[in-house]
Length: 315
Image 1 (cartoon, rainbow, N blue to C red):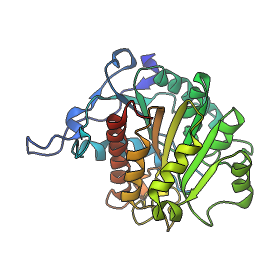
Image 2 (cartoon, helix red, strand yellow):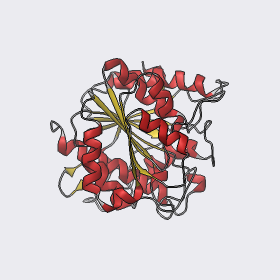
Image 3 (cartoon, one colour):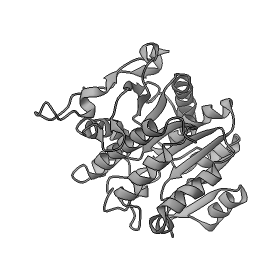
Image 4 (cartoon, one colour):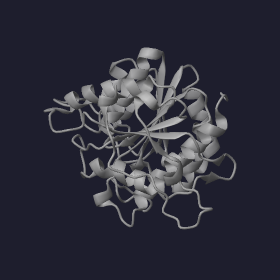
């Protein structure tokens, strides 16, 4: 099992010289699947951007997210300090040996199955959005599945020849996805045909504007959409944020969520006891400015983990 992952070239060390400043770098520990018992959450890096439709660079996302998280303090005012986080390293299958994105997805799915079999919340660090499909698909073997997609785009493009970063939810629907909700979708960023595809399958789409106008109402809409599924997988494509907050993504656009709105959403969504996986994708450091996107992605992880810890056992 350990062969599915390579040790990430990253040292978890806090950056502050103040001994009272406990940071994620002080508490996250490298581990292996064999030694993962006892952790509440497990980080898994996926350095891959071979399926990106837009600007490349997401292969450097896992390292940047780890670095930004390491320098973030662990304290949350309501949930308390973060604890119980292990790092499995990076998925070993992400090399140059695969000729197609679908081959890469098959290899990643094998690794993801092993992570889901462990008694901890999987937290995948992307990497591009094409790997959402293999990250979430193993949960369909365990029962009904709903996905919450925080994204400027619906990502239900038709697979034409090979999969892309725009096809993961279409692929999940093809293998039996039971529920879908997109939060933060942007006007003029998708096609009518793909919106109709989601509507025809009973999916929920909430624009960035509607989320910003009524965040609590948006959370309730998601809960309604996920009411009948056994497992919920939450994906954050960082382009859900306004380009001012996240310039380092494949497709930055104006009109998105603020970081504050994203963090509130994640804290609320993470409290559901049916959460079975989480990911942050499309962080592209070469396209970033002053690490804004990586820092936003790291804080998204921190807020989600705090909400998850605070709400375990709730429905």
